[in-house]
Length: 161
Ligand code: MG
Image 1 (cartoon, rainbow, N blue to C red):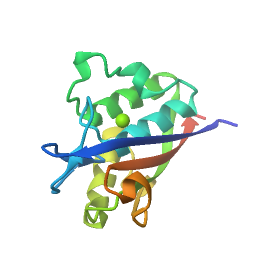
Image 2 (image 1 turned 90 degrees about the vertical axis):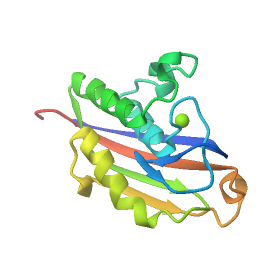
Image 3 (image 1 turned 180 degrees about the vertical axis):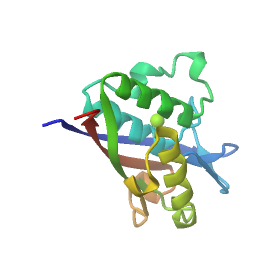
Image 4 (image 1 turned 45 degrees about the vertical axis):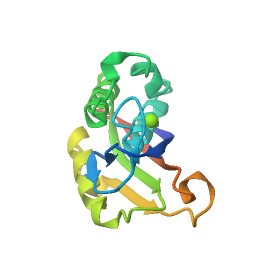
């Protein structure tokens, strides 16, 4: 079978004086995600799913937070590089599905922009990029607005198979 599946998860803390960037889209909000890179938790979960499908480890291995090269890094640029790594190994993304868990702000108006941006970064039709958003019903760190998390599943197929 020339198919591989991977899953990814990430969470970042919310804080003041930071932009909120999800799926490569900057969203108006009084809080943003803290992190060494731009802290785009959705794009991070997707990259980990892509790497996981090929048992290649996680993004911390390729873009270590201890390396100043990745300080403030645009995660969409990192996604392009992970996609290239996947392609270099002879695989391509078939589709992505993902969930963002955030109490606020309302993400629905931004979902299609995220699908377009993520799809464009890896040469995938937006119809093959699922992005969903849910609140955590005020439960846990996401529910208390301490952070935002994201889950992703990615299917890969062998190029030319
Ligand atoms: Mg992360």
